[in-house]
Length: 112
Length: 108
Image 1 (cartoon, rainbow over the protein chains, first blue to last red):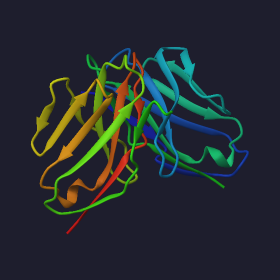
Image 2: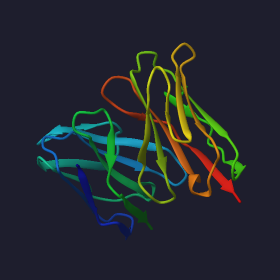
Image 3: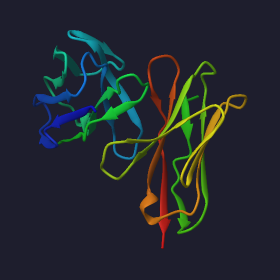
């Protein structure tokens, strides 16, 4: 079965600092990968998705970017964080053979 | 109009009660439907898929009404451990669209 690893689990960053969140997947190959953000008390907002190495689609224009350097690695980055970037960032993967998402444990970001 | 809408709640119910949530969707071409459960400060986890004929998993029953474009989740004999946020998920095409979630609080 698929396992999704995300790190760091929690981080506090100052405004204007860079960001790198990592996600790796085990137990599957050539997965569709997703980055979601959930603001406090809100629903999930799809940020990026990737169907393969180097293939990134952005759903929402913002100061974040994503990269997929390897088949099972998905990275979310920012050069300069904004206060509004605070939230719970979730990496997700399509379960093989089914239209179901499996989520990692998430990275909770607070921008001060 | 949002693609997927849910009453945010919270629904406060006593243990043993029956509670139902609805979720409406706007895209009539949606093909797949799911309920996810999210505990506080945790990731969402699949609770159950929703099939056209309706389906049951223990105390949980999910139903789909294509004509009115909504899905429902019924929880019977509520437990304290059912307290969570329940997310409705709809798939118009290849992308999953999440509702904002309905918060359930089961009280002793």
